[in-house]
Length: 454
Image 1: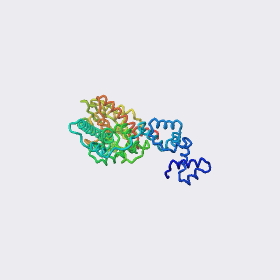
Image 2 (image 1 turned 120 degrees about the horizontal axis):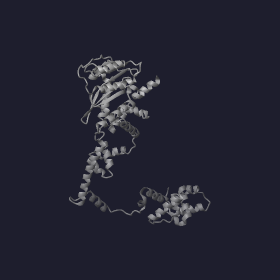
Image 3 (image 1 turned 135 degrees about the horizontal axis):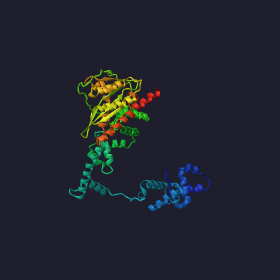
Image 4 (image 1 turned 45 degrees about the vertical axis):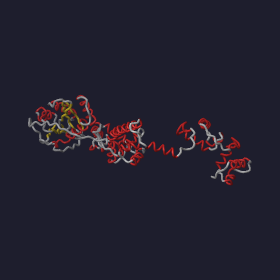
């Protein structure tokens, strides 16, 4: 739109007010926009000819606030407010409103006119670039700031890299992003030893919303709920129960980024003392499949050594669903460790059950007392071959899981604390821990499902 002088604006307004011409007709002839003519008419009605006399007055902060408050209370527009207060431009009123919303009352302060001379600007810039004089207060302050930054940077790096173990450019950028409120970015980039462009590349991505945020939170919840015992395959299946469907490689990558890993270690107690009784034949013969409950049981003894003390665990596992149906913990590997466990387990037997109980050739299982009890209950005894742990691989695998997911994963305050955690783990193993061969159900869930079908 062309610029119009005050006289031209006044003439256009008066033409309209005479009532012989419409705004559209005047706009077409004069090339002035419809909205501009409406604004001039409003100005004239409010302030008369004075509305078109240019004012070079510098508006005070108080005046600007009065205008903005009036607009807020009455709901008037910037155009209407400009006409009412005889402000030459409604755009100026809009700028005041935006400045106040973003910068508060300070943003309404009038700016000083003019600019520094070129010589002053150059001199000021050169003075800033000059290093402070050695030994001066400025030099000591700069050195102190540099030392604080060099001390803060590695601490932050350690926090960010403690999980992943690697210090990548992304981690360096994250640290700079965290510290930039306190220190200069240019100096931080030097300490981090990465190009400035690399930092700004990552900064853009750090400000983006993480599309995996929700699934990461779910992964962390599942991981800690199972105390770090689940790897990415099991976590993927748990996520699917929560309607989070992702490829297993994606879950593995996210877990690596989060520093979440499953730990595995193993230790075995040996109870073999030679032939001290009768050796039973290997009836199981590595056939670890069982269609029904109380068809095939396996047992063994393992040892835990903590706080200068030992604890021995003797469980019985049902091969149908992998459930620990009975167990006993004692501080010595005496016969009652196995005997009391057996008495607890046989409470599950029904008269129709035909059961095989498999073990290694440990001295407990060779004793006449133990074998007599098996015959009384109608249980057929089976033993692994000498020195062949694969013949009893299922119970060995359970011990490996137990030690990986409990003993080597947690720290214990006392031996009593360990025993409590051991009891809790066996409950967790039976009731919550999914098994792939059980269609991702826990042993108890699988047994319940079998009974419901039956």
